[in-house]
Image 1 (cartoon, rainbow, N blue to C red):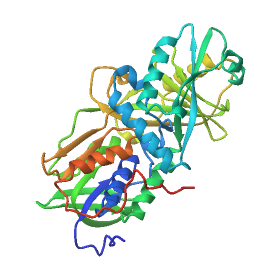
Image 2 (image 1 turned 180 degrees about the vertical axis):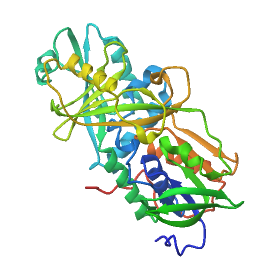
Image 3 (image 1 turned 90 degrees about the vertical axis):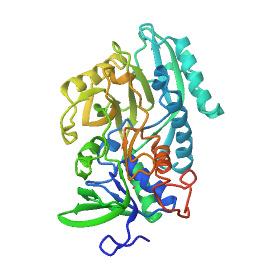
Image 4 (image 1 turned 45 degrees about the vertical axis):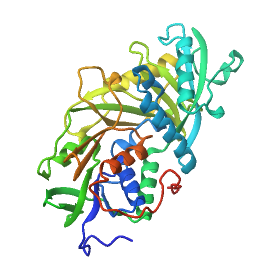
Length: 397
C-alpha cells in the first residue's frame, strides 16, 4: 500500500500526469512492474479525449490505406488481449461495410484490405470476414438499397471508453499506485535527482517528488510542460477535432463502417445505449483544448452521411461531443498522418521526463510498455507484481 502524500519522505519512482487512457495505462504498467507511482488527474478518469472516442477497440482497417501495417498489427494484438482480460468492457462485434456503385473502394480492393486485416490479426477463424448474401440484406433495416452491390462484414470490438479508463485506474490502484483526483499540477522543478511537483487538490496544495515525470495530458500536454522548470522539449504537433453525435433515433442494431460520399473518409454508425453513435470528423483545431465543441459544419457533415445511407430517417440528437486527437504537424490532410504514438523525452539515455503525444485507445497498454522501456535506465530495479497482458481488469459500474 502506498504511503500518503503528506507522510511520504522518499520520491515516487514515477509521477504520471493525466488520467486518460494513456496516463492510467502507464500508471498501471509501472505499478505492475513494481514501481511506486503517483497518478494525478485534474477532473475525473477519462474526462477528456478518452471519453469522446468512437468507442472502438480495433486494429484500424482504414489505416491500411496509408500503409500503417505496424500500427494495425499492434492494435489487433492489443484488441485480442483486451477481449481476454476485460470481457465485461470489450465486446467483439460484426462491422458491416455496404458497397454501392458510387463507392470509391471497389469490392476487390475491400476484399484485399480485409484479407490483410485478417492476416495481421493472426488468421483466427472467428476473425474471418464474409460477404453477406443478398437474401440477408433485409436484416439491415433502413439501409438504402439503391445502387447497393455488396455488403461485407468483418470482426472488431467496441467498448465504453470512460468505463475502460476507470477500470485501468482502479487496476493501477490495486497494484499500489497512489491516485490523486481531482489534482492539478501547478509547478514542477527538476532538483538534479528528482522532480519537485506541486499539486493543487481542491484548493489544498501539496508537494511530492518523483524520479521520473510522465506527461500524459493529451491535448493539454504542452500546457503541463509550460509549468515545468527547465522547460522540456515539445514536438511539432497539431490538434484535430473528432466530433460525434449521440442519436436517440434511429436506434441501430448493428455496426456500420460507412464511406463518406465526396471525401472517402470512414464514419462509424454504432449501437450506443438505446440509440446510436455517429462519428467521427477530422477538423483542424486551434485554441484551448477546454473549448472543444462540435461545430455546426461537423454536425451537418455527419447528418448528411446518415441521410445518404439511411434516407427517410428523422434523427433525434440526444448529445454532442468532441474530442481532440494529437497528430504530427504536417501540411497533409489529417486522414493521411500517422496515428503512431509520439514519445518525447530528455535527457537521451537516462530520461527524467517522458511525454506521450497521441496514441490510440486500443493500444494504451502497448504505449505504456514503450514508456517503461524508455525509462529502464532511469529507475531502480524493482520486483514485478503482475503482467498487464494477463491481469483481468475489474468491472466498473
